[in-house]
Image (cartoon, rainbow, N blue to C red):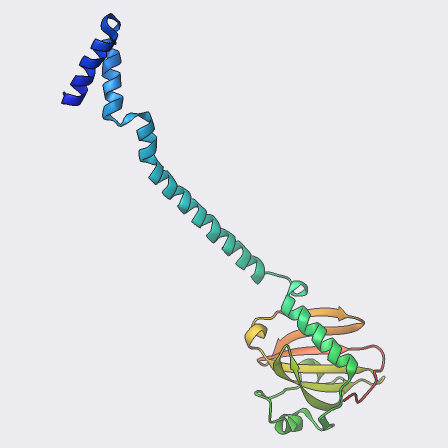
Length: 209
């Protein structure tokens, strides 16, 4: 028996006199003291409990991040802020019908002449037997250099095709369709380029500088 515990036994006997604890009671009390007492047991477990809580909090943060990342990857095209902003910018330029830098010609000829571009424009497959090419001009879509090609169909209705590289925020942009103030805008990727086609049902004013 440790001296401190033996001394406790004697002091308890002196204090209570004839009301001394039973042997079982003293034994139980000694056992609790040897184990550190109830409150000490709780305290000894506190660091481990705090560590578990920290791990659980970290796990929760990671799972929330994974969920949000998955949610963003699966966002529908109509909800994509980049696609929506690009569609609005293209619709505005299409409606204004700014003056062209190059008139008529073929897509191949315009590709050779538009030397400021960092890509080679191409005629999309869906437009090879469609409207007539009128001309082209330089422009930008969300700050990225682009080419704007103007077409008209047999009824004289204009459509404007925008092309730029699929890089930066356009790298993984999904195909999408929008209606912006009466202008139909379609986005898709083809030949490593982002294609944005704006169409109107009515003739627009031409040649705005």
